[in-house]
Image (tube, rainbow, N blue to C red; front, side, top):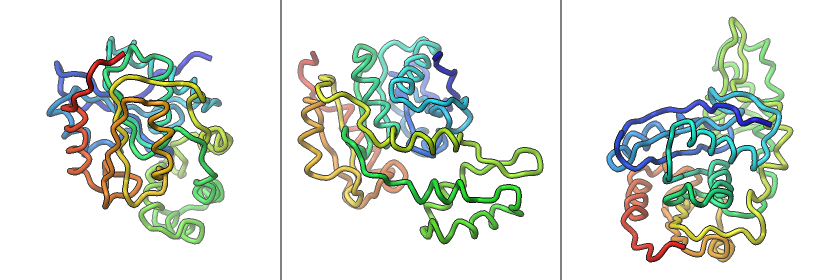
Length: 265
């Protein structure tokens, strides 16, 4: 299938090295608003909405090959040669796939709190809550929040999910392609790269020390696929260090920028 034209936010930094940001599952480019503005001190910053998220087109497929092709189409559309690519969670999986398929398009890679491996089902209750919400009956966003409480007891997680609740005329509607994302749950928890794939370019993995998405035993497989990888752990952060510990995250990006990577093959 042809790759859709992705929506994006442009934070500025014209003339500086381009940096492309990819959000996580059920997120959007808005997740990068705070960190993205800060990153313009060193980069020209673009934050994409992945297909079926944000304002990007809805598609049936969530295959990682298709997601990577979408990103590469964006680079071509913007006439961007080599870029720095940074992805969080699902976006990190997409970024890893881009690195394997088009290493020549990347100056460097940053992956945030995800590993190149298969994951157990994680978002089942989130999807159950979203799919069971009776949109036609909702009176307000507060009503939606109350109805989701039993399945998603964590307040912050409910608010995150509800960033995807918009209006279609007088009725509420999900802005994400919930049908396609629900169908692709098993696909998205797989590794996005092959067992023998490797990217030899400059790479940093930024991990949340309080997160369980990347464990110490995952470090070996990271180094197998990314032999130049540096691993940064932000001790007091969970799964979203770019939001939870923004200053520490930005400092990790500075160290990535200034690292001595040696000869890149």
